Length: 238
Image (cartoon, rainbow, N blue to C red; front, side):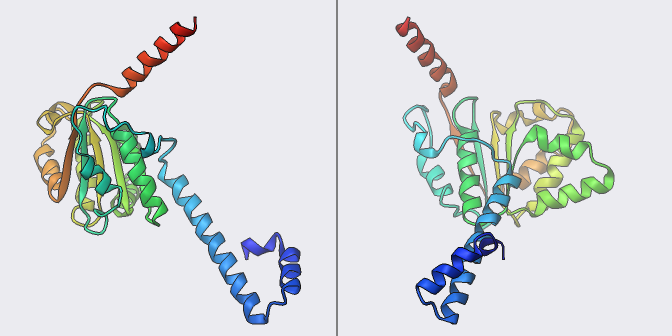
């Protein structure tokens, strides 16, 4: 019993002072241990997810993008797509908050008790590339079976045809079974430039986009705006 072990004397003193019956003592023990187990499970899932630091949606400036489907994103934050194994794809240029939105959805899924993996496309594909054949199959099973997988930043780097095959394998293993969140700065018609000479792009997109909500965000980079505001603030102070 992890929760009570460190403070058993205090627990017994409280039970004696409040004159708990044996049944009450057992109920309090069970409740305390259940709460501690849930807390440790949450911490473990957050650590394994690798969502890392992110801004909450309360800080998101909905008025900044020139185009954004707020209803689609807010619905996704309720995790309604998880039970139906539907995918969510966020498309938009750099600095519009795609990663931030994806991180918030993944965090909500962890809090709701789901297993989550958040990976950039580069780190996911690099991890699969460097495995032995046996290790790669284990990793593919992990990526295929986790409750929610987020593949971030597809299109920021170019990959070879082997990488396209690996990404297809991940998507195919989850197809109609487990949901995927994917962010990309490139329209799908340009994915043949992201994965040059890859023969599986059409099939990959066919699997990815079936049962998928695709939402586009348009506008100028929010990070550039923040940088300009910070520079202006520093100049005013001087």
